[in-house]
Amino acid sequence: MTTRPMGVCSAVGIAVVAVDLSSKAAITIIEPLHRLPFVLPVQNPGYLTGVGAGLAPGLISLSLLLIVGWRLITMLRSGAVSPAGVGLVLGGCLANVCERLARGAVTDFIRLPWIVLDLADVAVLSGLVLLAVKQLGRRGTRGSRRESLGRGLGRKARAHAPSPPPRPDAGFDRPVPRRPALRG
Image (cartoon, rainbow, N blue to C red; front, side, top):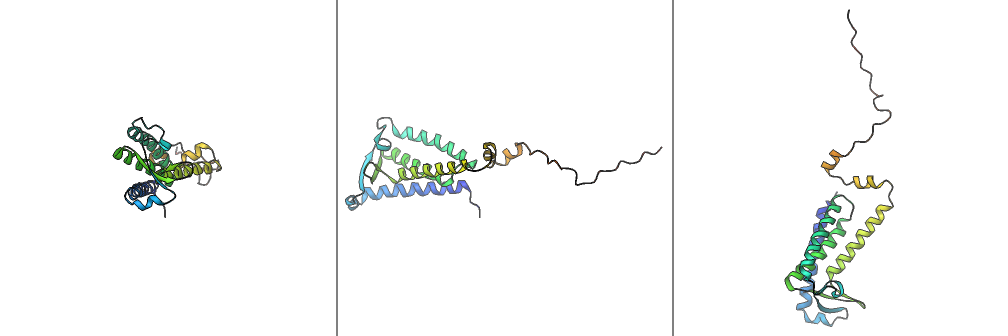
């Protein structure tokens, strides 16, 4: 059974958005969860660790999501990246952009000794690790860079790609046609 990369990417991205936004809703509504040692709900108006809080983060996040999303989707179509990794990165970014545009800040609630983050941040970091692992794995394969880039070509690109050189023994397996005799 073959899977379609865009389908995997979309499913993972939608799941990340749903889980992240529902977990943030649960944290803000269910008060006893605040007593857990690893839960600390914090409104973060900036990015990771609050950097860039005064820079209209909603619009900057949306523009970065569009730029990064476009690049990752083009890489996904070429087969150069992991569909699950792209889905995790785009899903995490989209979840944070949605919350940032709706509330003006992101609710971070997972307390670690050095940082407080949310599930969208975990998804983005996990997706980046998957993408890096896929790229490192590609470097160990045999073949040239041109061959690895050509593997994921679509129908249109394959139609315009140069054809392979002829085999040295091409044409020797069929009989030579006879010329008709000249009548005089």
